[in-house]
Image 1: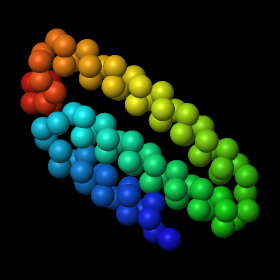
Image 2 (image 1 turned 90 degrees about the vertical axis):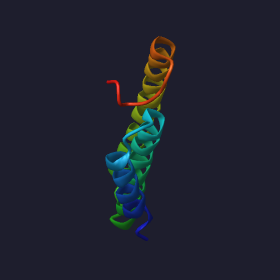
Image 3 (image 1 turned 45 degrees about the vertical axis):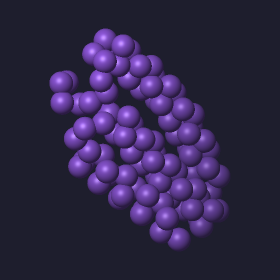
Image 4 (image 1 turned 60 degrees about the vertical axis):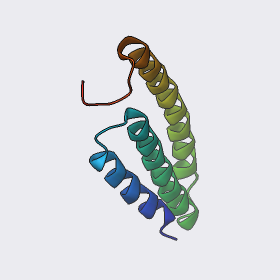
Length: 89
Protein backbone atom coordinates (compact mmCIF):
# COMPACT_ATOMS: atom_id res chain seq x y z
CA UNK A 1 0.00 0.00 0.00
CA UNK A 2 2.76 2.43 0.88
CA UNK A 3 5.37 0.99 -1.47
CA UNK A 4 5.56 4.17 -3.54
CA UNK A 5 6.09 6.30 -0.45
CA UNK A 6 8.78 3.97 0.86
CA UNK A 7 10.56 3.98 -2.51
CA UNK A 8 10.35 7.76 -2.71
CA UNK A 9 11.71 8.36 0.80
CA UNK A 10 14.51 5.80 0.58
CA UNK A 11 15.67 7.00 -2.82
CA UNK A 12 15.54 10.63 -1.65
CA UNK A 13 17.71 9.73 1.34
CA UNK A 14 20.06 7.84 -0.96
CA UNK A 15 20.29 10.86 -3.25
CA UNK A 16 20.91 13.30 -0.40
CA UNK A 17 23.51 11.22 1.41
CA UNK A 18 25.29 10.05 -1.74
CA UNK A 19 28.53 11.99 -1.98
CA UNK A 20 30.70 9.81 -4.18
CA UNK A 21 29.13 8.15 -7.17
CA UNK A 22 27.09 10.05 -9.76
CA UNK A 23 25.71 6.83 -11.23
CA UNK A 24 24.14 6.00 -7.87
CA UNK A 25 22.64 9.50 -7.80
CA UNK A 26 21.03 8.92 -11.21
CA UNK A 27 19.68 5.57 -10.03
CA UNK A 28 18.19 7.25 -6.96
CA UNK A 29 16.52 9.85 -9.18
CA UNK A 30 14.99 7.14 -11.34
CA UNK A 31 13.75 5.28 -8.26
CA UNK A 32 12.16 8.52 -7.02
CA UNK A 33 10.29 8.86 -10.30
CA UNK A 34 9.16 5.23 -10.07
CA UNK A 35 7.90 5.75 -6.52
CA UNK A 36 5.99 8.85 -7.60
CA UNK A 37 4.47 6.88 -10.48
CA UNK A 38 3.36 4.12 -8.12
CA UNK A 39 1.65 6.65 -5.86
CA UNK A 40 0.05 8.38 -8.84
CA UNK A 41 -1.23 5.11 -10.30
CA UNK A 42 -2.56 3.95 -6.92
CA UNK A 43 -4.49 7.19 -6.49
CA UNK A 44 -5.70 6.98 -10.07
CA UNK A 45 -7.15 3.53 -9.46
CA UNK A 46 -8.50 4.53 -6.05
CA UNK A 47 -10.42 7.52 -7.41
CA UNK A 48 -11.27 5.85 -10.75
CA UNK A 49 -9.62 8.60 -12.78
CA UNK A 50 -7.91 7.93 -16.10
CA UNK A 51 -5.97 11.21 -16.17
CA UNK A 52 -3.63 9.98 -13.41
CA UNK A 53 -2.75 6.93 -15.50
CA UNK A 54 -2.09 9.07 -18.55
CA UNK A 55 0.06 11.44 -16.53
CA UNK A 56 2.02 8.45 -15.18
CA UNK A 57 2.66 7.33 -18.76
CA UNK A 58 3.98 10.79 -19.64
CA UNK A 59 6.24 10.72 -16.57
CA UNK A 60 7.58 7.30 -17.61
CA UNK A 61 8.38 8.62 -21.09
CA UNK A 62 10.15 11.65 -19.66
CA UNK A 63 12.04 9.41 -17.22
CA UNK A 64 13.33 7.36 -20.14
CA UNK A 65 14.49 10.49 -21.94
CA UNK A 66 16.08 11.81 -18.75
CA UNK A 67 17.95 8.59 -18.09
CA UNK A 68 19.26 8.43 -21.67
CA UNK A 69 20.49 12.02 -21.51
CA UNK A 70 21.96 11.54 -18.04
CA UNK A 71 23.79 8.39 -19.08
CA UNK A 72 25.22 10.07 -22.17
CA UNK A 73 26.43 13.00 -20.05
CA UNK A 74 27.92 10.57 -17.55
CA UNK A 75 29.79 8.69 -20.30
CA UNK A 76 31.11 11.98 -21.68
CA UNK A 77 32.21 13.06 -18.20
CA UNK A 78 33.94 9.70 -17.67
CA UNK A 79 35.80 10.01 -20.98
CA UNK A 80 36.90 13.52 -20.08
CA UNK A 81 37.90 12.97 -16.44
CA UNK A 82 38.46 9.23 -16.13
CA UNK A 83 36.40 8.88 -12.94
CA UNK A 84 32.72 9.04 -12.05
CA UNK A 85 32.78 10.83 -8.73
CA UNK A 86 31.05 14.04 -7.83
CA UNK A 87 33.88 15.58 -5.81
CA UNK A 88 35.46 17.37 -8.75
CA UNK A 89 32.31 19.02 -10.08
